[in-house]
Length: 340
Image (cartoon, rainbow, N blue to C red; front, side, top):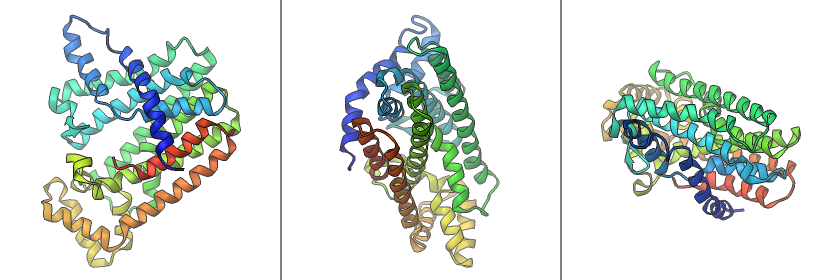
C-alpha cells in the first residue's frame, strides 16, 4: 500500500483543518491582556503544526461509511485541541524543553500560564461539539460520550506511564505496556477520532467496531514506533527529544522486554541505571541502549508494531471499498514507517 495516499490526503485537507482550528481562537480577547496571557499562547502552540492526523482520521472515517467528510471536521478539531492540551501538560510533567522545534509552552511563558492554556484547550473540546450546527442533538451526545471515554482512558494511561517511574516499578510485562499504550495513545490517536467520524457518518454497529479495532491496533503501533524512534531516530529529524525516554527512565516496551529477557546481572544493572533518572550521563544512556540491543528489545518492539498493523488492516475489510478505506490503510503504513 505505502504511505503516499495518506500523505497526499493530509496535504489536501490540512489547510482546511488549520483554518478551522484558527477560527476557534483568532477573534478571542482582541485588545486585552487575555490575548497575551491565554489566547496567543494556545494559538501559537496549535499553529506550530503537527500533521493534523486526528481531524483527518475523523473525516476519513466519516467518508468511509458514506458520510460527508466535512461534517466531521469540527469534532475532529475538538480532538486536536485535546491533543494540544495533552502535549502542553505532558511537557510540564516530563520537564521537556523542546516541542516541534520550539521551546515548550511552559519554558516560553512559565508553568502557570502554560497549564492554564492547556486547561482552556480542554474546555474547548466539548464546547466545539455542543455548538456544532451541523450535528443534531443525538449525534452531539454520542460524540460527547466518546470524548468523555477518550479523556478518561487517556488520563488512566498517563497515570500508569508516570506512576511506573515514580514508584520505581520493574515487575512489568509487555501486556502491561499494551494496556498503558491503549490508554495513553490508543483512544485519542486512534479509536476515538475514528469512532467519532463513524458516528457522524451514520456507521452501522459492525462498521463502528471495525473502525475502533483498526484504530486500536494502529495507535498502539504508532506509540511503539514513537518509542523506537526516540532511541534509533536520526538526531536531525527527531531533534533534542532524541533519547528523552531513556533520560526519563520511561518503561517503554523495549525496556520492559529487556527487564524480562536479560540475565540477572544485566537486570540488576538496568535497575541501577533506571533509578538514576535525569542524573544519567551520556555514557549511562549509551549503556542502556546497548542492553536493549543485546537482548533484541528494539527488534522485538518493531516486530510487534508490524504485527499490529498487519492485523489492523484486516478490520478495514468490514468497510465498503472506497477511497477513504484505501487512505486509512495507507495511514496504517505511515504509522509504522514514519520517521518523526
